[in-house]
Length: 360
Image (cartoon, rainbow, N blue to C red; front, side):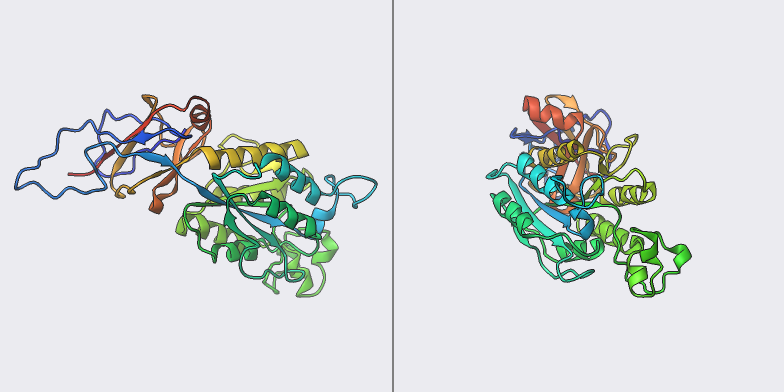
């Protein structure tokens, strides 16, 4: 369910926050006293109405930023491709084919595959601009792709951010292992977190440092996406239990991206130890995006208290994304419900209301 929570602006006691999500109408009501409308009354802020406002489910652009590096051509267990075993790349492709509805008109899909200009190069633009009915196009793109090269994740995310969205957007970044193609040729070998065979990182610059974990640059662009652009970055990783250091970094990326798994989860990113985990991750993400994201017609002021009720029950503002709602794009007034709150909206389609209370 999606619910709005306290946002500052003259908090009022006795308010409840319900959840919302799905095709239900959501309206905003206030239990405050009737506003003073006399000749000396202050001008009313249209963003703080004294009447219900409708919360509507909104289309969200979902851009898949996909690691198409050489290691994605290995089998799931990291063996050379062959002997009738599918590659990681084809497992990801087939999982998306099973999970994504091919002609869902509520899910606008885009894609950026990388690297696409050489070992550590990424060209500008998106391979698929977000639009509905794009699943066949996405699968065809996978079929034409041959996994090779490094993992320049920071560059791929930068290219994606450079293409502005038409509305709220979520980036789903999928990779196996950690991002590399480090652009610092002076990384000392003793400080290098090698993302591949150690001998590759001991090679002379620039080849050696490029195999080192590209931590700082990658985290910078993930934070910028979420904090400056209001675009969450969801991390899906093919988790290698022999490299917990790389998994720890994917956790950092997930936390910086704004849509991490709840605290207490084994991993904060969507970790796929088995192909079935990948299916569950993509299914949960796309279901949340298509069913549990809503938009307030006129975004409330930053100092307003916003309270949302779903089915008459309070739903808390929950930045931890365990059970409640959180903003996904504050500037556009987009918010999402997480956990059981989202489940309730999908299952029961309850009425959703919100109170917007502004400081006097």
